[in-house]
Structure formats: C-alpha cells, structure tokens
Image 1 (tube, rainbow, N blue to C red):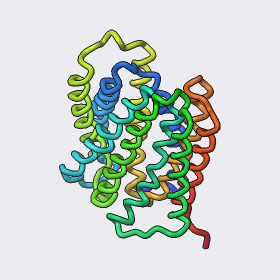
Image 2: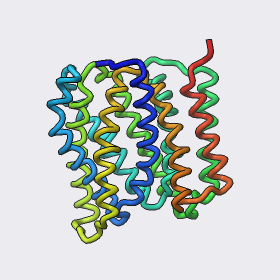
Image 3: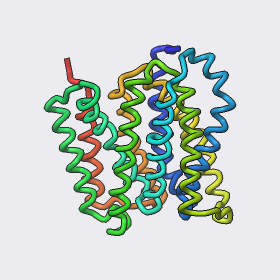
Image 4: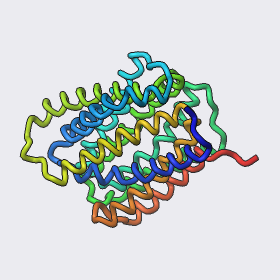
Length: 291
C-alpha cells in the first residue's frame, strides 16, 4: 500500500509536529522515575499495537520481519535509545535535547558509507564538520541549566548513536517486511527491558505519578509512539532514509521554541549559535544536490 502522492509529505509534516512536542512531553513526566515512565509508555503502546496489528497487517500486506531484527529494534530504537533519553532529560532541557538528537541524520550518513556502500560528497562532509562544531558550541555554554548538565548531555548523545545502529539494520534487512509487526514486537520487548531496568534502578513508587504525568505518558504512548513509529517505519519502507532525515532538523526548532515558551530552558548565545550550526550542518548532509 503506497497511497497517493501527497500522503508521504503530509505524514512527514505530521511527524515533525508530533516529535517536535514529545521532547517537552517527556519532561512533563515523573522526573524521579525516568525509566519507569519510558517503560510505561512502551507498555501502553505495545498493548495498543497488539490490538490493532491484525487489522493493519491486512492493509499492509507484508511478511513479518525475522526475529533477530525486531529484537534488535527493541534493544536499540526503543529500550536503549529511549532509556538514555528519558534519563538524560531529567536534567537536559527539552529543546537542547532535541538539538543534540538532531545529529541522527549525520550519523546515518556516516553509517551509510561504512555499512551500506554509500559515499559522502564534499558538501556532506562539510555538513558533518559544521554539525560537530555546533555541538561543541552548545557545550561551551551552560545548556540552559548550568555546568551540571554536561554529563547528562554527553550521555544523551548515546541515544541517537544507538538508534542509528538499529535504523541501519532495519533499512538494510527489513525494507520488505512488515513495519507493523516490527513495531508491535519491538515495543512490547522494549517495554519489558525498560521495566526490568526501572525495577532495578528505581523500584516501585506509584505515589510519584501525578495527573499531568499520566496524561503525558498516555499521549506519548498513543500519539508519539503507536501512531508516530508506525508511520515512520512505514515511510522507511517506501522512501529513502535521507528524505526522512528532514524530520530530524525540523523537530529541534519546534522543540526549542516550545520549551522556551513554557520556561523549559533558555536561549543563551551558545545555545542559539550551536542550534543554528547543527541544523545548518544537517541540512547540508541530507539536502539533495541540484541538477
């Protein structure tokens, strides 16, 4: 099922809006229990996927992915990437987190040359260096909260790295398989892994959950996970990964503006310069050459 020509650009725009706001949604959850919040998000999302998968599979009409591939997605794209992200966002403001995560398409470009036989042009190489300089510029400031954010910001960089590993494997080995089954199985196993890590690190503290935290978790699970990831992996089957990378440099702009608007972080000089350099560098990496 490929859909009409206008469907893919529309879905990309919707994903930008959703993922531009999820960074703040994570910050609104229970900061004392980041792994518990992440595990609850994927547990709810996994339950919904179990219910809707039979119907969606009939529309999709693709064979299931191999077991090792959805296990890899669970470990990398879900449990690993989001476990790191949730822990890091207990300190790092949502907008800064989104900008640091914007190196994802840059990592994908590097991974493409190493594992997928692709090559980097001079423009793309320049974009890589520009993005790196933007990250250095951001770390030279206070990241909106002070020097104590630096270790967590460094940890956060592990999230897009882990996700890039999973995405490369999915793109290489799963482009002709069911993205619906991949999502369902990956979310359920990811929830189990995050839940186990939460019990070991955080224990059981239901009193920490507020109405705001529950609503935020439910919205992230249903809209930011079930809908967004099902849409993203469907698009990944039908579009070049480079085009989908457009999402990664639109969302940090939206996330930064939204975070500042509600008082989550601030726009100091280093953050403004660094954000601009990262986004400009990513644009150079993913932009198609003229002609």
